[in-house]
Image (cartoon, rainbow, N blue to C red):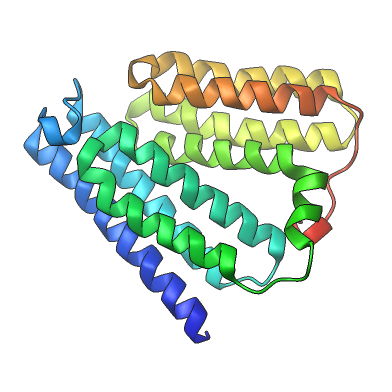
Length: 224
């Protein structure tokens, strides 16, 4: 691991620890102004902890690969988590958000072949975004309780299955699976606002992709 990777991992680890700390603080403090006056601080605190864990995992993954596509997904994951945490933990999330954005910037600044990210985005940008959104479903599902959590985990898996079905030219089936992936968990967690918004994005981005002309997902720019 070179010095750049170590710096990236350090920034990501700091963001993860701060994120988990923000979630723990929200659970302990309850409904307070600096945590956004949430009606259910315990559940959202666990969601915040999950976001911190995802940030740490994304940072670690970015240091373990040289594929431009994989690093692009890691950077997008850090960016999305940095923004989502502000909706779950309010001001308590700001330190973690800043550290996550630093880690994201470090990924963006890493050397890569000329035009590598442009090629990935041009070829697979919609699929990449759906994968990032499915990771959000997975993270929220892991920290949610009982059957609601299972809906989130199942939704994440189903979204990826929908992308795979599109690659095999099963567009109608892929569209149905995409809807089934997005809607149930969003309805079950409508009180969070975050998950319905994520579902809207998943459908707005994913449905046009899976209903479009089929083009198998390739390893362009390192995605496989």
